Length: 358
Image 1 (cartoon, rainbow, N blue to C red):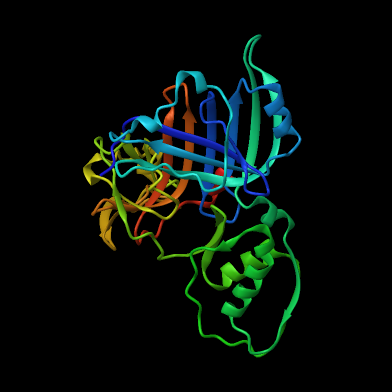
Image 2 (cartoon, rainbow, N blue to C red; image 1 turned 45 degrees about the vertical axis):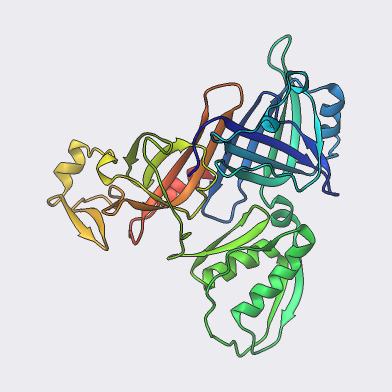
């Protein structure tokens, strides 16, 4: 069992050859957003007081990719994990295969993506910074095109495999694969344009969503969820009380935990979920508000409005649909905020809420 002890942070900038530098010992603030739709995950990273030489390397696009590893080292921290005072604030050089995890640790990659742009500035007379903005799968999303045909008798699996071949030049690999129907199409099909658009059409045919995730592409169908359940309470990193909302699921904040990803299952104490408060107007317009158990979830019914409070899982198990990371290597901020929905819930996350996350 890992322990939330001794924060762990690595910031790697990597070039096209897989070589790069580590900037982990500098003051860094970061914000990362990862959503259950096709839009690439977004990272905004601010690094303080780099040398002019290192800043110029970043600005001249010497590095094409950024990797952020965060979490906790745990109690089993060996002497080799301690950075000497003389090395703090210095650039270290790495290859693309660095890993120093121990058995008690709880850290991992929370972002890996293409650098979109960078800009420098000064916060005050003494402190300079560089901001790096990156997106997961940005180049493939923006640049990958296709010109191909499939002969009559093709299946959606054939279409999927063909689209994957056009993503390979961008380093994108297969991630979570969907369940394909046995349908055989009697006519051929032609493809010309952006691969991302055809991925969206394929996802619609499969009743799925798709997204780039850590250099892979995942197709997520409605009932999919990662099997392992992460228990969240005050002892394992839960911060404050989970909040039932109207239209945005159940909102949860915890310390950064790389084991929790999109579509992960988390388990909460049902009694700890703070219920959404209905306004007097909502109560007056209702036809008799009730809370019923449907598919193992507590559902609020009888409201006149379209959006009702998010379903509460009677077993406390929720699927993570949105994650926002925020951290400061020199400050107290080290959190992930999540929007979750109960398994089998019919309410889900509203379109208006999803649009706010884009």
